[in-house]
Image (cartoon, rainbow, N blue to C red; front, side):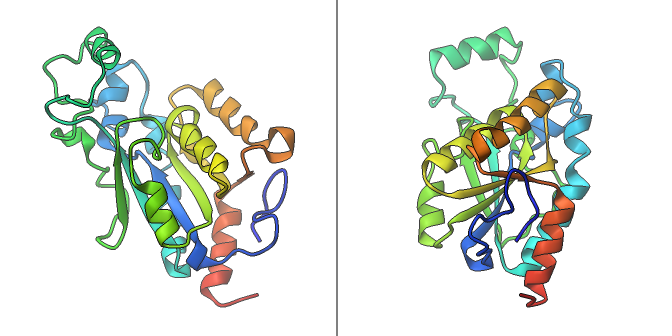
Amino acid sequence: MIKATPFDFPYDGRLEPQHTALLMIDLQEDFLSPTGYFARKGYDPSPLRAILPTVNRLIGAARAAGLTIIHTRQGYRADMADMTPYEKWRRKRAGLDGTDVLLRSGPGFQISADVDVTPQDIIMDKTCNSAFTYTDLELVLRARDITHLLFTGCTTDVCVHTTLREACDRNFQCLTISDACASGDQRAHEAALHMVTVEDGVFGALAESAAVITALSRLADGAD
């Protein structure tokens, strides 16, 4: 089991690699780059970049243990046909008209080169904050008999938390890794992590990466 709050994960003590996936939410250039969307909105992307070494350590431990590795990317079609009038208004208000920021045709859509991605990993593209909305993520998870999800990525308070909430409603067992998530707003980050633990774990459990890596290393070594 993984040492976590408010209960050790998973609740029944059955951490099985073949039923577990590690999710990296939106570790893209548009959020991590000093010239990407996040920076253009006035946020400092450095807290997001700071989690990358931790995320890569988790990826390495997860691969060694036999977990499924999933990366998500957020962005719209190049022709913006999938963007609502409200989303276009927000885009114009942010001064993004005429740019390829948050478009799948732009370089900012790509996962950061500093993230450990291999061809065997699954990449899930989305337009919404949740990785479940208008995607086949749930189909992929069900097809692979995945029941347990470990969450990393950015931002903690938006795309990570929205995906986490939907995962819980779909009855996946969820663990958020606190030091492998980040936001440009520290108060929002801390609040999002706290919300995981309220009502005795309404959105699953919360753990630090060291505890997760220790448990995954034991799985990789075939320990009980």
